Image (cartoon, rainbow, N blue to C red; front, side, top):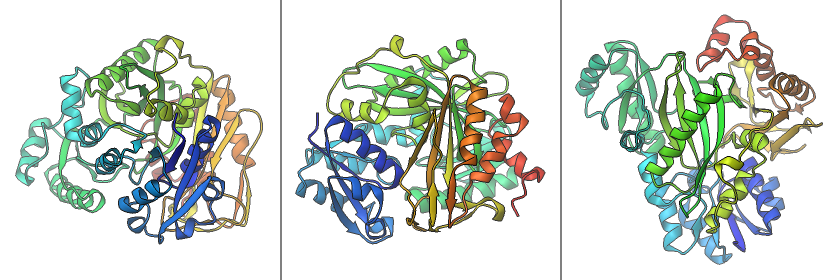
Length: 453
């Protein structure tokens, strides 16, 4: 096991990693930007070093500064969390060259799976169902038009190096395709310094289902069941749950086997997520693989009892998985609500500022992952997430009731948050019946049932 781990991140995920390290007897080093000096992760880490001003480009994305701190503090490994450098192959490569273990996949795996078009090809060759689409990137506007007409509208253009909903445009005809093609390329270049895009057949209002996987460096691979992440606003997840009410035991086995097959096809190691689109008629297609821990990982932890961050660290330290696929049992039902600093009554405008009062929910089956406290200032420079509320209960109906109860007693003053909107979604008939898909939140907002203005 490692002696000391550097955490190249901030916020709730940094705190989550610190807690896992402490329970493993591993010392921690935090790097932080100037505005984060008073953050909980900085206060709770064994060591903390400031690496720059507020802008991520001058702090959390400064590879040379992070590596310098790692060498000065004599760390064995670096955990990147999610976002920032978590899927940066160059960073992982530099870690390896400095004899520092990157807690995640190797650079080659990040490169091949991070490029969505290459990942599609890898899955195709591995026998994993993929959404009908282009072979490789689109070469030009004319190429895009030709491919779309052959494929049939609607189609979706995606950034090859994309993630987080950036560089994506849906097109229903030639005119919207041309506009979407150029918009996706521009956004992709701005977000990822890579304007390559590819095209897929657009599956109208599917379920977004993802399977959590773990793969050690000794050839052992398991999946830990699925998460339903279909409640999204502009491709950003709001509420996740496990297991999915849309999946039968037979389909779960098929998708789980496909997820394991995908991991083996890519020779992947550490934690990752295979994301699928599930059509209304039951067909599922590989969408992408995330080569990192995800925001919604606590949902899986709740129903399996497995600490995914600890498993990441153990795998990176060279240990074998201590369990097999047969050992993994899904128990009860879990729901995660992302609480963001945004005003749902003002079209979800960002709402940074000082938290004047913070009282998280509690009680049996309630977990809150957050770096926030009374007096903490939510910065405008980073992600707007304030907290994650994770609920576990013996069944889905109880989990929903518990989640609504917990949101009722979750008090955050000084800023506006997404709590009212998430509470509203939990109370809708479609959510209660499990009859929702990736288009549902948009339908709710368009209907005016929840007044955002």
